Length: 98
Picture 1 (tube, one colour):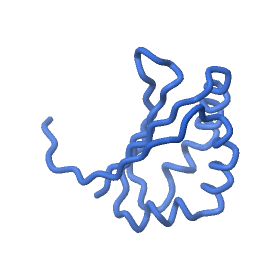
Picture 2 (cartoon, rainbow, N blue to C red):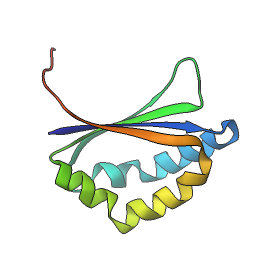
Picture 3 (cartoon, rainbow, N blue to C red):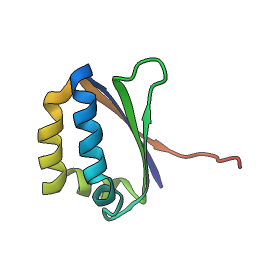
């Protein structure tokens, strides 16, 4: 399993545009082949910083999603909303404590 974290910093006036876009696309993203979990977070101190946190069965499935027409169209609409370049991490989960 792969954990994907993406940090996005938006211009203040674009945060609501992003939130609406996420609302409209979250089910489609979550139902992508290999995506087993999806959450959205907002920084407590800076509301312009948001993170997506997702689980993927494999890196190949994440890359398949990133190469899809749907992702490319979504990314094209989101890209102008960012105030700085998004950062992304792909991680292997080593341990979970419940």
